[in-house]
Image 1: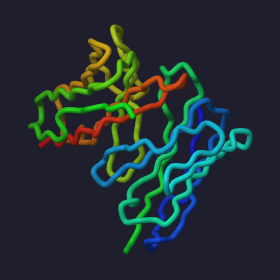
Image 2: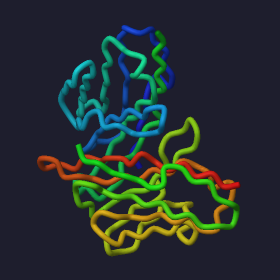
Image 3: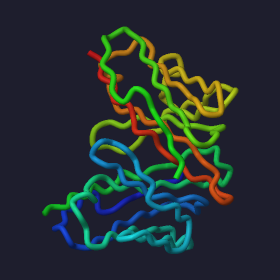
Length: 111
Length: 117
């Protein structure tokens, strides 16, 4: 099956710093999503981005589908950005197949 | 975005008892829902795919007689952990897909933390 690798596994930032999280996947995909899991366990949708670039406030994401990777940028990080960031992909566009998750990047933003 | 709810958020039960977890899509219909399990500091592990009106599809290694899934309506799927044991203690998360502008985006419930004593 498709493999998803995320890097770095852990990241510690000073508040206000910028960061880039990477997601590599082993096959072509029709769906790629980024999630933030907060300290209470809730997964929050950040981006649906199988290709191209999107921005939402201090966050932006870019997926280069032909090279099988996606990047999540966090600018001017805040302590509330702490948590685990997951990348997940799906090969099918049918909507009935599950997402395959990477192992996540654990981000700690310190004041 | 779409909202998925889960109930209960936290449950403690004694070994040998059964626990039912409900997953609801609040503002959309979901013919397919997914159940995941997450151990501390690990990623999400897919347990099963729940299809409305038909039997669930379980991932390899997941006991279907232990983790009973019922998807009786387009907005409700339930996971019942039968004869629970301490090793079943985990964080269980459901998800559902909503069709957004021609593509499916997956949304997650807040999770249920199960502790079996």
